[in-house]
Image (cartoon, rainbow, N blue to C red):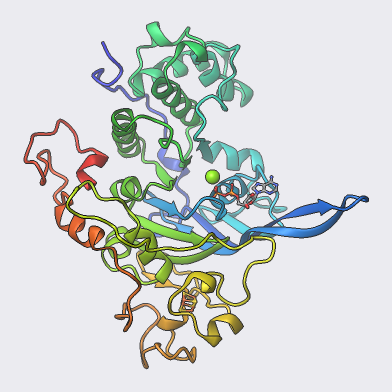
Length: 407
Ligand SMILES: Nc1ncnc2c1ncn2[C@@H]1O[C@H](COP(=O)(O)OP(=O)(O)O)[C@@H](O)[C@H]1O
Ligand code: SF4
Ligand SMILES: [Mg+2]
């Protein structure tokens, strides 16, 4: 029986007593997180600058939600993921997990954080030991945390079944005997072995074929529901992020430029960068052609980013105030609020296009919109909004909803 057709059986992992603060308490609060990487040079190998990979990010992740993180390559997504697990030591900032400060004297220890938060990377080989069979790789974490070998092995086999792999067939296999999709399923099982509450998926499906990607996405959504998980889903694929996320956070050069519910971000993006990013999605319709790139130029050097708004060198709305003053995201608020860091949406900013009395939380129409890619607008009408088992575009029956429904 193939991996995709096998019924999923989920081991009972989560204990309900672990939810400390109730549903209103964010699972993770990130405050002012900062990470600069030193750049060394010269004959004495001195520090000559810093890459500002993550620069003062504050946001929260609510229990049970999927928060999508998008942004161009190099904007700091993976650095952020590693900081959230303390795989990298932050220069500044604070993490609060379910009401408990992380890595503080009386707060949550790093070991406890890493039981609660697990990560799946894009490179499906990176987390698997080439000399260990799949079931041993999955059982490794629980064994390190004190589970008896026989119990850890039984859990590993349950998890293999849960991710759609027959434990008899795939448990004894080494990584080189598995396909990319199967390896990523083993990685997901490995991440679930410690019963995490938050799973960070850093480009976890990006390297897979589209059909396998759709299977793994469906698997992730099933596991989330069954095991009461929360996801932080990092991807450069805007269609996949739209498909899986409840809220979306848009990053540009180490800053959050916009955050909000997925419908608001995709149907009424506010920040000029988000609008350009969404407009750059390719069309599946040969009749619809993109004549001008919606986003021109390369991202600036992260060692010496532009003053004020970091997007100003590529923004068609940039004004003097954008070079002088850094636009700030309104203070972090938990929940579904749509907020943006751009002077146009701040009536007191002095930006000529800022509309008086506009709340920073309310959308406004920008008077001179960025070059809109009509592709996206036309495509949006084709998106399968019902996400039902029938494709809205071609009306064919679908066994499962797939990311292709978003095209
Ligand atoms: N360990 C490191 N040392 C120095 N620079 C790094 C390191 N990791 C990432 N960077 C730099 O930090 C920036 C953000 O990288 P990354 O977080 O991997 O971006 P993304 O995942 O969004 O593509 C990039 O400019 C990258 O070159
Ligand atoms: S703050 Fe200025 S430069 Fe930055 S996105 Fe808004 S209008 Fe453009
Ligand atoms: Mg990355």
